[in-house]
Image (cartoon, rainbow, N blue to C red):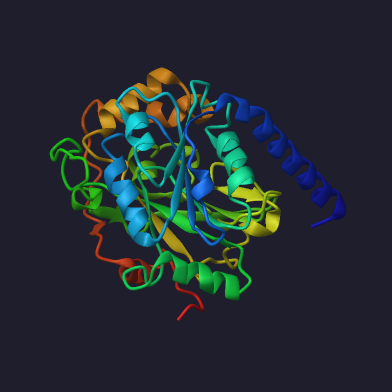
Length: 336
């Protein structure tokens, strides 16, 4: 990369950090327990709206993985989620009635919280419907992974978003609070993925899976991006650029080799497609707070009128992380 390009990216990073500083005024602390955070703690950052039914399993899943403290922005929930989060002893929660879209889909809010509280910590940024799977996660806590990353001088860890779905109609099996969503959404596309290099930021752009296959069959280039870098040894000088798809400095995005798969990587099991999805999609379409004039939710609304099944004859049922490694969707790399 040339000196001019490096300079432009530094300017962009300062711009995003400046936006985060301005946007922090939109956050009101409801339960600030950040004084409890110890220097070695693993932290999780998230934004949510009306995810009360998902939160019990989400919090327990990551507690069991080794997360010590949760820092969550509630974007004006109406389902009791804010009160529920405020009652959790290991959660700090902020409330905002401001526009999710104008906060760059929550990125500005979380950049600010990570600048203030994440410096020097391994920080995981996920949504309430995303569940990290990493090599040896069935026998080793997240701390084992971050210790290995530290020892290997690796500052960031990637995880492809893997859309999970049920076999049959999305509304056939009701989801209950506290339930493992993968008991219902147990299937995924084992192939059907495309990769291309984003030369400006140095990351891979991944698309495919059931959302491209079902919702964007005629415009595959408009399908949602599946590449994410959710786990980072944070420094207050860092900034996410677009969700967790990419961040600055640019070197943090270089988590794959040219063809992918050789460096250690994980998966985010994405349990979006439960019986709650139709109502959620309608709500988000009405709010118009998502990327590109909510084109993704417009596609959902159009296709879901006929209650399509996402399952197909090429769908594969999820077993464990080793299955995903065999399929080439994640890798243990040099971690043994």
